[in-house]
Length: 587
Ligand SMILES: Nc1ncnc2c1ncn2[C@@H]1O[C@H](COP(=O)(O)OP(=O)(O)OP(=O)(O)O)[C@@H](O)[C@H]1O
Ligand SMILES: [Mg+2]
Image (cartoon, rainbow, N blue to C red; front, top):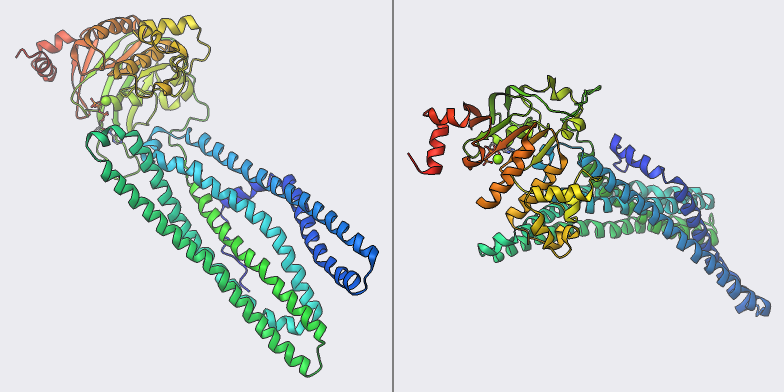
């Protein structure tokens, strides 16, 4: 008999079983409640016998009082068991959901930045929201179902064999036939369910994008287009769901048919035996009722396999993420970078994104630079030249493909990542703020900062006045402001955050690009104060903001084509002078 149920247990499934097993206490209690419930059901059925024989036929008045009371007690006990069984199973299921959500979130944030570029936000959200739910439904149903139904199947099958083993053997000849559809339906469900979850993840990506991009959709009059796309996606999801329904709903009638065949064979064989007086009618009826009662738990076990297949498919998707390893790994004994000013060296650094793909086009091509402590290095050049990429390598957001980056002579690949990142304050090209109060955004990663320090950082970033004008000042939640903050305001909050971090290495990627000239002059001054004694990398398109840099590097297509001070470069008739003339219009 093929009892394998397609449970190809991989290590990840074993881990799932481990997690389920860690809730054994609640599961055992729930199991006991299930047994009590089953006992209650049997008792209710059994009570019909005295109800008929003693009360109705023998007209026994004491029994007339006793039986209703006993029935009430049985129902009370059964009801209590039912409540606790439901409560306990949900507790286990929901704890598992929570564990998986936390595990996923915990792991995802340990993955490098490249992971977030390769995976869509909507897909990750769907993993954390939908897939874990499927696991819960598998756990609740599988554990509840398997325990109760397996007990019933064993008890009833044993009964039939005890009644008449020959007839039982005949009847159960059909059983192997029953396991084939169980197996087939399970496999099919697993496939369809995977497709369903992919469609669900697509839907959630789509929602994420189109709600975030509502402005552009309106501006370009694309509402109808996006609606049509959405309707298409729900149609696709609906089709997949209906496919799943077809298999799901087909499985019961098929099982019933197989059961019917078994009973038909039993009746034919049993009746034949009765004709020949080798079987009593009582045994015959008891046998047929036991077989008929077997149908329910067997059908449930079939459904159980469907739940398990669906759950295993979800488990696979979740472990695909959980087993993803970070390519940015720390050495076994990483060297901590002490605080203080730093000497930063890039030695023949080459870099390409897509480390394991085929796109080996170099974004940085043998870049070398040497930034002394306290030196301000400006990076200028065409858009797409690799400036942001270059500064992203320093906090080890990505690992370089060749060459080395050294901080005070320590290769950053040997350094303790947390200590490395503590040395760096960064204002990114895109301002990123979180749905928290303005204060917490400025004090991000700096929880013990004093109010004075926070306010001073805001003042230096030229942000104090507009913060004070907000409804609740520093306590105003960014989320409630929605998109009310202007680009320049967001940028100033990000600058304040970097100022407060007060780190020895400063990275400013177009930090003042969204400010007006007046604000820029003031913020520039604050930044210049801050740059003193710090190794600073400034990226700017507006050359006016970097004229005071100690050194300017011109980066074109991943190569440093020129380096020198503003004056040196202007005197040279090169790329920098061309850029400068373009901006200031004097050729
Ligand atoms: N995550 C990424 N994956 C793959 N390619 C990327 C990624 N980020 C940037 N690139 C590519 O690397 C090149 C350099 O990009 P980078 O953002 O460093 O340019 P940049 O000099 O900062 O430009 P800009 O001045 O416009 O900000 C570009 O061709 C860009 O398309
Ligand atoms: Mg950039």
